[in-house]
Amino acid sequence: MKKHWTYKNIEAFVFRLWEREVSEDQISEKEMELLKEWKHHAEKDLDTRHIRESKERILFGLEHYFSSPDIGSAKRVRKHTYKIAAAIILFLSLGSFFTYTIFFKPDVYFAESASRIVHLKDGSVVTLLPGGELTVAKSFPASTRVVDLKGDAVFSVAKSKEHPFIVHADGFSTRVLGTVFKISQSGKKKSVDLYEGKVAVSSPGVPVSYLKPHQEWTNFGIARTTAVISFTPGKTSVKDVPSVLSLSFNDVPLKEVVAVLESSYNTKVYYPKESEDKKITADFTGGTVGENIESLAFILGLEVQKKENTYTLKK
Image (tube, rainbow, N blue to C red; front, side, top):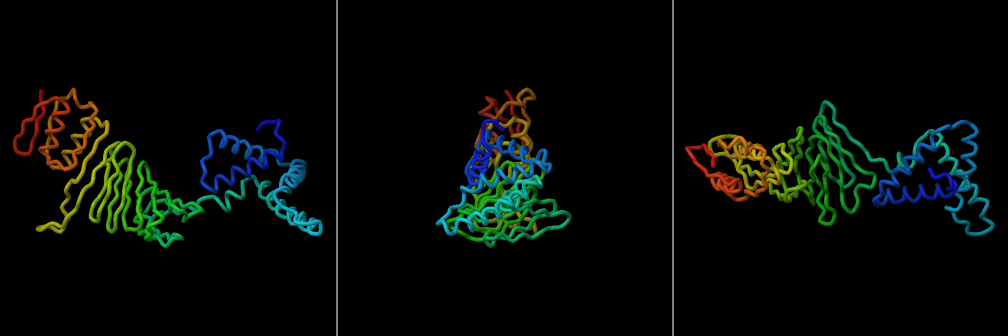
């Protein structure tokens, strides 16, 4: 903390940062460092003498935040101010930013061994699956309804054309206006299954994916990879039949691209060992398995040989 600052100036600075935090304005790293320094300064050496001095300084520092409409009411205003300041001092003496904890600290919901249903203020319902954790800001719902998710959950989002609902998960976000969908996160593998309505899923380095009911977005557990898979009822089986609608890679090693192609199309692809770490950027949306592998061979400058359900890429 800068020693040449007066205590009154520091109080005003902290109050301004709190106001910006509530309005969700961005706080710089330097300002965040100063807040941490202030917290440390407020907590250390809280003996009787320091508490007494802190009371006097905070009272003077807070008086200018309250107006005095006339001389007759000045005593009442000052008395009211002292009561508020005394409450602030009480919580500061316990070593915490009480305003943050009570008014601004997000609500966190956790499902341990069983699912947990969370009812949000906008009418949305979130079913946290075991191990799931949902973080909701005190300002929710705002112009944009934003929550953070760890683990898996099913969302039934209250419809609002004016207020989008955004779920920030581990490395990707899902944006909706009102729908029912499931987010799954297992290690590096992420997926979004849509049951009703529409959603947009975004992940760094790949195009935004738009889902319709009975479609799934996934990254196959590979960074900068995205796919949309459609599920249709099977004619001879109770299981739905998956089909790949879109498939995109951005600077992904060939060996991982091939692994996705093999699992998605139930095929086998051979390629030169020395090319396995070559980075591939390609959009295979709309292509058949044969067309996609031909495109991959073109990128690598290789020829394709096909035998039944096996493809061989060679020079």
